[in-house]
Amino acid sequence: MSLYEETLTAESASIIITAAFPEFRGQRVELLDEGWDFRVFEVDARWMFRFPKRESGKAKLNREHKLLPGLAEWVSQPVPDYEYFHESRKSSGWTFGGYRRLPGISGDISKVVDRHRVARQLGEFLERLHTYPVEKAREAGVLEVRDMVAHWRDKSRDQLSRLIDSNVNQGLLGSLPRKRSSFDFQWGAESGSQ
Image (tube, one colour):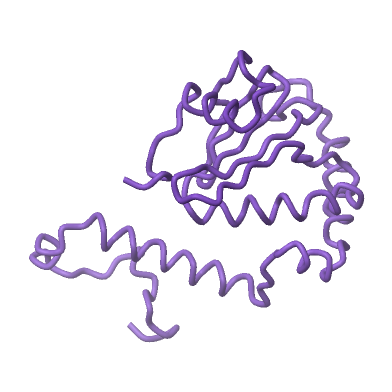
């Protein structure tokens, strides 16, 4: 089992964080949330520590670590400032980063959200984000994709193909009658051919 296949718990995250940053010893660590790429642990109700869930997440975290300081000076809303960053050089070690909890409340849990104000703030943030100098993003290692639709279509096909290959009993699949469905959406075929 690889490092990134392990399920990181609050207890194991606490051990890893305090090994790298002893000043957090004795602080409460809780799993806050997780998404496709990262698990986020809250430490002492003031710090967020992000851990990649797979090897590819290390590169994403490293890009964030390089990009966000310049972006913070550019955009109109706060972004994470990784004050703690541990990059393991060993295959057996974790790369992770920690930043102070950002101010505010989550809009999905608050009944008292001024949606017009939030929309205006989000619009200003996105306007600034979209004017960030491309050369600075490149310097931080941000990947440049010219055709984003084609990029995500190809990436989705690749991921779905790997899921199908790893999770479907091919013998069973071969014994089933082949019917076209909406799921087959021109899979790998040129548009218009069926």
